Image 1 (cartoon, rainbow, N blue to C red):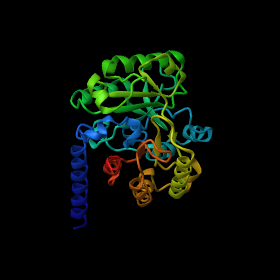
Image 2 (tube, helix red, strand yellow):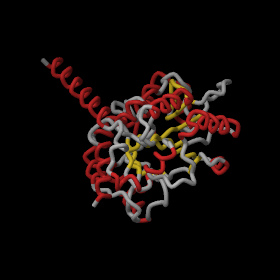
Image 3 (tube, rainbow, N blue to C red):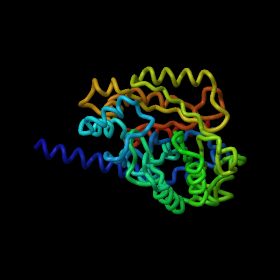
Image 4 (tube, rainbow, N blue to C red):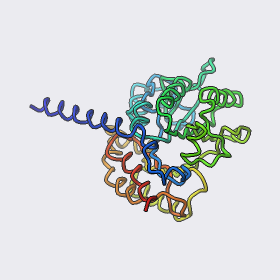
Length: 325
């Protein structure tokens, strides 16, 4: 009986996830006319924090930005550190296509080059590297966009410190080659009507000064990162940021919890998913209470971990109804 209940629960969860993925495929195309002339940075957009962490490669090298202590431990006892890194670095479970189908329109992409890799391939990274390359995922996104002509995606290329000048050039060329005329130049006023008229579907936020050399690259969108595992501290931080006033263009409020090595060592039997889901009751009311727009305390992009859990995506999209009032 217990096994049957477990199977029914898993089946129900899968059906819910599938329904979510079908319901928001083209939510931008279905917005009321009044919202089609509002710039995207004054609207509420659901985002995926560390969007590519669903396909981390447990046998790949550790990210060079990780602590020296963790890297040293990994050399001595990888059989212990690797499972820990994997379960505390995995922030998403849906594939990139499933996330887009679910309604996500901001993808947090951490891009790097594997240490000691003689090829010019780039991968996504969060603690460890992904199995898939950046090139393959960008192609997948481009194909998805071709089938959803009125949807617009913000690609945030972040945490690029490990890339050298040549690798930056290769990445920028890859982005421009892959998306071509889909890319919205940074001088454009990005309302949906304007984007649709020109066939623009991609806004690239690039976290490096090389951005200034290309009209296709937008400045890095500020990410409000609380850097805490305490949900109340995180929300307090976000409220303080709002008091300071919102940036002029795109910016992100991250409702993602962040653990450190000491916390992990004290919670060896847990995972990032467990602490995230157990604290949803803090985040859901906060999200529903937000307002998009150009006001000082308004929000724009809200990014979360495990975007398929609960009503996060629908709650963020629904905030745009406040712009109709």
